[in-house]
Amino acid sequence: MKKKELYSYVFWGVLSTILNIGLAQLVVWSGIDYKISNAITLVLVKVFCYFTNKIFVFKTPFGSFHRFITEIVRFVCARWITFLVDYFGVILLVEVMKQSFFFSKCALSVIVIVLNYILSKKMVFHKQRENGVADESIQ
Image (cartoon, rainbow, N blue to C red; front, side):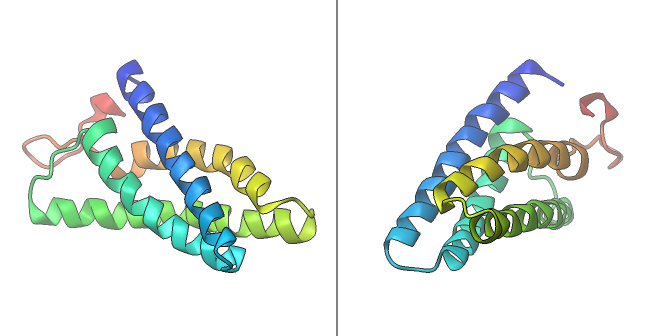
């Protein structure tokens, strides 16, 4: 793991976490149910995360259309996992454990950040060699 990559991931991860929690809280304050607010926010933040991770963290080239689509599909699959962890984790904390929405979003963010990094590093953002095989040196 490269330190520069990790620092970049932490920077963009903190920024996306602030965006995630802040936007979700604003939508809740506007009167929309916290479950809908959470789902809307998660989708918007996932799009933000794709581009920041691709461009600034893992720095994978855009390359061919096929590689781009493959990477997008992998990203969506990986982030779907963490979407479910975040979405249902918040519901569990709010409805079963009687925690506030804000606290629940903050608590789940820690778990989601770690899972996102692992899944992004291992499943999604692979630098490609000329022959199309993933470069193992970044793994």
